[in-house]
Image (tube, rainbow, N blue to C red):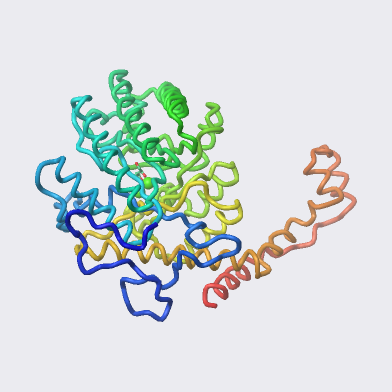
Amino acid sequence: MTTTPFIGAREYFPGIGRIPFEGKDSDNPLAFKVYDAGKKIGDRTMAEHLRFAVCYWHTFCNAGQDPFGPGTRRFPWDGGAPMAAAEARLDAAFEFFTKLGVPYWCFHDVDIAPDSDDIGEYEKNLKRMVGLARERQQATGMKLLWGTANLFAHPRYMNGAATNPDFAVVARAAVQVKAALEATVELGGEHYVFWGGREGYASLHNTDMKRELAHFARFLAMARDYGRSIGLKGNFLIEPKPMEPMKHQYDFDSATCAGFLKAHGLDQDFKLNVEANHATLSGHTFEHDLQVASDHGLLGSIDANRGNAQNGWDTDQFPTDLYDTVGAMLVVLRQGGLEGGLNFDAKPRRESSDMQDLFIAHIGGMDAFARGLEVAHALLTESPWEQWRRERYASFDGGDGQAFEQGRLSLTDLCAIAARSGEPEQRSGRQEAYENLLNQYLLR
Ligand code: XLS
Ligand code: CA
Ligand code: CA
């Protein structure tokens, strides 16, 4: 990462320089209060633990439009011919990345290049933009965390892409996946994501779910084979989400995705990209879906955001809740880190219309996760937290409990043990003690 921000032919964020770390007493809204990239937490720096990425779609393509009105942010790179606007947007993006000081970015094919129904033109546009992105990566040291294809916006995908009941659409989706895989490899992308945009249904009346899921697995296997053949070394990631835009989405939650990957023999190459707001949309907490993914050995990467507790929508807000970030980092640290990273799949509110709000939103998210990292690390290494959890299960560490875990006892053996031992002693779960410990470390 260079220390001088990348400025292309024009500066898109004038008056904003490289975002400094100023510490918790700083009043500067354009400075980090906690995130200090080089600070060591255990054996790694904050930057190495957190592996932050900026997402292209919300940050540079989404001006804040909602179903009731157009966008409110006036992007200086918008307007003009599609290709010229795409090039201006790319310059703005790399200026933003380097001023913010993140190591990674993520994109969909049609975020960075104009779409076209003409396959040749679509591929040509993407190739040109990938070439330019590559030059900018080389100039700045920026890296691609993952690439993906947008298989949900174009009307042709209204009934799904890989799960579309019409084979012609399934085949057309392959054009974009192949091109996006090539773009990802060309840019040295570490992973590749499939969010199942419209892979689901609006009505079961007209849907053969079993057949659609078999098609989905077949398609993912083909994409995996092609991706490996052109040199993608990292993980393929599917992204749990229970609904929206479809009434029901097949990648419902981490547990559903784990079952799907294992049932189809895809769990060696595929892992999960768990998004906070999707977990809450499925009625779980963020921490829950991370833990389920991690317990299956499938937690690959994270889309860091939050929903709104009051209405439950997929609001894609920036993460600021420290309980959430501590909970997430406890899961991440316990599994020894992330092969992927923390991608801010988040957008400022429609009412946050200044260009500097884009920076402020990311700074807040990075600080919230940096604090989550510090607190989770301290809880795991300095507090009695892990010891308490271990003691709770101590009865399985030896004797009959261990024999049970090892499968050396039958049901009648258990009954004999119960008769011998008498009524079990009551043992408190001590939830409040953990909650108080967490608060104590948050406040330190
Ligand atoms: C939408 C998804 C999407 C994926 C990438 O809800 O979060 O942004 O992360 O296609
Ligand atoms: Ca996402
Ligand atoms: Ca979302």
